[in-house]
Image (cartoon, rainbow, N blue to C red; front, side, top):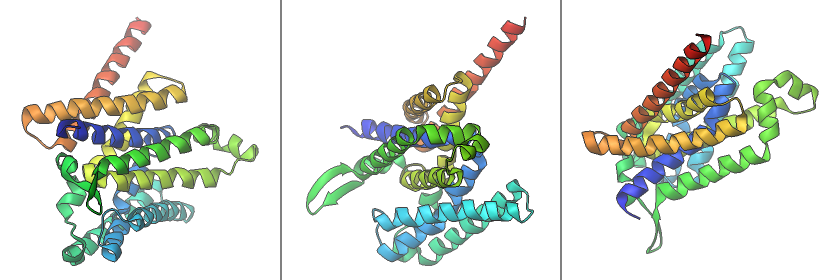
Length: 283
């Protein structure tokens, strides 16, 4: 597989994985919580690096998932205590993100991690960051990581599609039917956390937010069926990765940023087309 194909494939897996879980965040009007989680998992990643010295260690994913769940719990706890939801998100993610920055700054020499890598990532290096088992190379590590996370997200959505759907549209009815709404809420937050930490190497903390929002938000404009929306979100993520890579090559700009820009452009075009169609119908 050529370097170009690896870069596009990694971008597609990141956007597809984020699109699956991000679609539920869009439906539940919780996209800003996804933003908060994507920043707040940084301390878990930093601690995982600190204790293991490896970016591939499972403890890194575990640490990030725990901090993602901690973020969700803190936001809800503050809301129950009378703090507005948006304020609770702001307080929580800024405090935890700042803690992660301090940890990385203090121990960067031991964990081989820098803030520029965390914030922006560099997908262009993915083809040469190989997964080595002894002296055997299994290929680009990002492909294995994001491939596994995409499969995890897909399996979880397929297994619990009905529960996630009803919890997203009508949590009161879900609770009345005996569905544990809280459990599925934390399942979704766990998937968001794992997807976020997996995408750190490719797109960094800032750009992963775009991947969590844009594919799902664009798909939401195109259909009223959840199953179709999820499929469209994955497809739009793949399209954004391809267009973003071509844009990056043409303009000599960072690939991950160009993919996010391409995703925004696809959303803008979709929104304009939808708006024009609505005006024609009214006329």
